[in-house]
Length: 184
Image 1 (cartoon, rainbow, N blue to C red):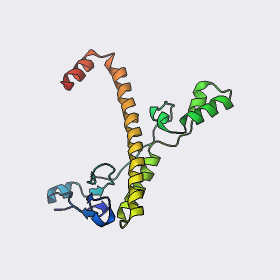
Image 2 (cartoon, helix red, strand yellow):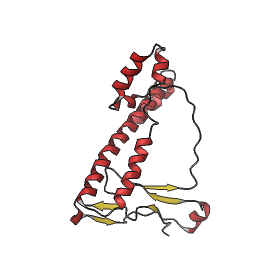
Image 3 (cartoon, helix red, strand yellow):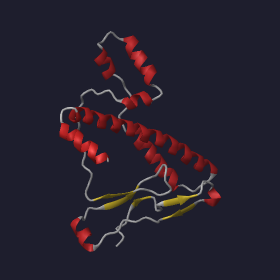
Image 4 (cartoon, rainbow, N blue to C red):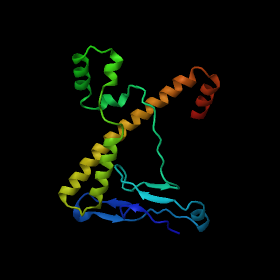
């Protein structure tokens, strides 16, 4: 049985021009009665896409719980990808006599993921609109900016993977051996 969905009514789109644009619901979340009985809070979301012509489907089996994280300072490589990074860094460096770590701690680049979430919501709304040249231009522009945010996210997670490698890889030969043999 189809378990329904939330989000746009379509999961596939083809054509960049309003007159050639086609939308269909090709992808579905399906389950049998036993699965639905096991996961009564389950839901399928049609998430907006930025590079594929298909929406990704997110299947959740319960409500999303978020927990607060610690507020320790960590330098984020993705900050350097923001256009304002150098200017903000120079301004803080020159305007204060605080120690370096305090200066870096004061860098304000917004919370990670806020712009990505905003662009995703904007793309969702644009995808629901009727297609004309202006809307299509906005969709393409939003996808470009969303892809840049996704790239920053990849840099963020790459930095964390490297930290784990340095933390566990150098100290544990078994970890290194296991990592090397998995790559083969």
